[in-house]
Length: 341
Image (tube, rainbow, N blue to C red; front, top):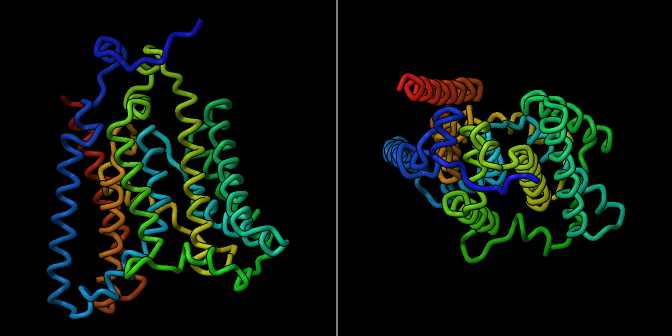
C-alpha cells in the first residue's frame, strides 16, 4: 500500500538533503524582495523615460505595452509553475503556433470557433502529456523532450498549412471580442490576463495542493520519502504549461484574425527570461507568478524604451540578451551562496 501524500516533514527534508526555507519558496522572504526590487527598477526606468520621451507615459503607449505582453504573459504563468517544479519547456512557442493553426483549420472546415479553440487547447494539453510522459516514464529531461517537440510541433504547423498563413477574417465578432474588444477603456485581453495572474499567484502562494510543486522542485527525494508522487506532479505541471500555451494561441487567433505557421519563434526564450528575471531558479523550488509577470513587464518596458529611443532592432536583442545573462548569473550566485551555507 502506498504512503499517503503528505507534506515533507523537517526530519525527512534533513535526511534527504536541505531544502530552501518555505519563506523563500512561497514568496515571503527573498522572492518578495526580488519583486519589490523589480518594481523599483520598473518605476525608475519609467521615470527616466518620461523625461527622455514625451510619448512614453501616454495612454496609447502604456496600452500598447500592456497588450504586447498580456497574451504572452499567459504562457509565462505556465512556464513559472514548470520551472518551480524543476522543469523547462522549449516548445511553448511552437505550441502557441499550433494552437492558432488548429483553431483556424477547424473553423475553416465549418466547426464553431469556440469548439475549435477548445479542441486546440486539448491538442496542446496532449502535447504536454507526451512531453510529460517522456520525462516521467522514459526518464528524459524536460530540456531534451521539449526541444524535440519544439521541432515536431513546428513542423506540424507548417505541414497543416503548407507554410501559408490562414486568413480568418470571417471569425464571428463575439469570438474576436476576446482578443480585440474592450470593456470601457480596458482591452479584454488585459482583463483575462489579470484574472489568470491573480488566480494562479494566489493558488501558488496559498493552496495546500500546490505546495507539492515547491517540494518536488526543491527536494524531490524528500518529497518521495514523504509519499508525494513526484512523477505525477511533474507530469500534470507539464500538461498545465502546454495548456496555457494553447489558451494563449486561441486568444492570439482572436486578436489577429489569422494563423501564421511561423508565429511564436523565440517566445520560449522570452518566457524563460521573464520567469528567471522574476526570481525563479533554474534548479527549481522557488518562484512566484507575480515575480515572473514583473520580469515580463520589465522586458516590455525595455523594448518600448528602446523603440522610442530609436535604437536599432539588432541592438535591442543584444540588450535583452545581456539582461537575461545578468538574471541567470544572479540566480547562479544565489544558489552557490545557499550551497556554501
